[in-house]
Length: 115
Length: 111
Image (cartoon, rainbow over all chains, first blue to last red; front, top):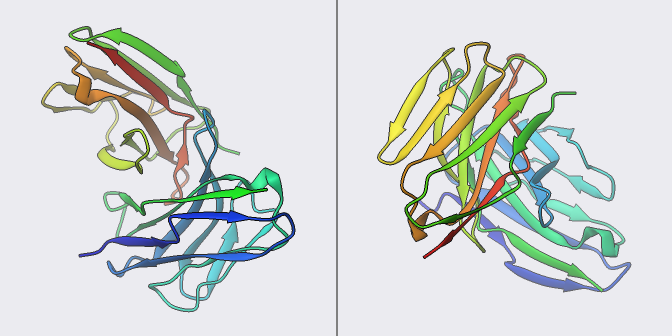
């Protein structure tokens, strides 16, 4: 099993450019998440999805957009990149089925620098 | 909204010393998870606690969930250099499967 696959691993953007961070999982998980991690600040939830066609904002959604057209894919779109979006981005997924089945699997991360 | 506080932010120990990180929630949790992130890596699931007062052990790691299900701790006995990393707690509440992560505790082990 590949688990959660994120691409790219590294990216440098210029201010004002746009890009899409790709995330795919092969575990048939309903729940998918996007987090950003800044040094010493833990993981902040950007957007999440509880199933195909359903997305919702997390703690820090401004400047980002997501879509969930299939169970497997959950891309994160950055429009008009700003230096404040320099961060490490993690995609994660988890299954459903009750309180015992919420372990999250994380991708390898995307290190984004906006200059 | 739900907040999960984690302390300390950093902890330096000599190899062989014990280490504890604490997690406190502003609301009653339905479950709490612990993750470890090695430097430059991604968070990896360690364990999930569900029951009030639950204690689970994984070799030198002991995880506890408070009686009121508002706090949790991770204790490492006799730390080793392989324990280096950031430990996160993540709590879910109110029937939601969306976990809220603490800021993490970075463990630095000096040989």
